[in-house]
Length: 237
Ligand SMILES: C[S@@+](CC[C@H](N)C(=O)[O-])C[C@H]1O[C@@H](n2cnc3c(N)ncnc32)[C@H](O)[C@@H]1O
Image (cartoon, rainbow, N blue to C red; front, side, top):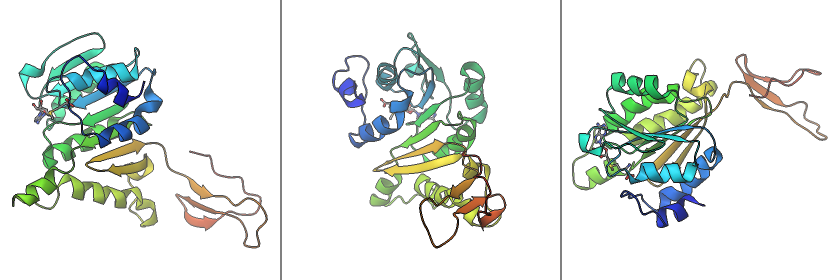
């Protein structure tokens, strides 16, 4: 069943999600359905979204919610909730120690940029190698601007824009980072961003078919160069 259909038929704990998020979640989480995966959601509130993930992802998934509010605590088959601050890396590490490496992290917690950025910095490098990191409600800094409370530069939107540069770090000499080498995509939707991990080290653009213009190009640790005649293609990562 689609996530939207699961949402519409949901009768458990309360859950609210902006409608456009369903398209994004369906697209990025579908491949985890019926897999043995760990999803961590920052921000539990009534707890309905944890139940929704469980129904959507199926019986092999484990769902962990984290929230700063003790009233959000509950437990059921496949679902655990732990209480702590998303900005506290010691707390986040205790979650990883207890439950293992997450495949999916969804940040629907405080919606404060400094918290979102600090959780991302700690958890993203610790995701499984093809994991997914989602930050919801990116519109919050824009809303603040509307009412005249401009968040200082450095809000989550600014941070995500800077990560676009880092994604392309290999094209800026000396600017490749672990993020550059382990991120396949950054997808923006209205108010939501999805970071997809993946090993991206040897990029090459082989040419097939007849051409008067020589071989394809390789972008690897040695930089941008043409494929040598007879050279085998780099390992496809
Ligand atoms: C929007 S609600 C979560 C809604 C839920 N994900 C859903 O889809 O139904 C945000 C939650 O984040 C929690 N929260 C706020 N600040 C937090 C922080 N610093 N660390 C962890 N949780 C926080 C709040 O207590 C609240 O329950």
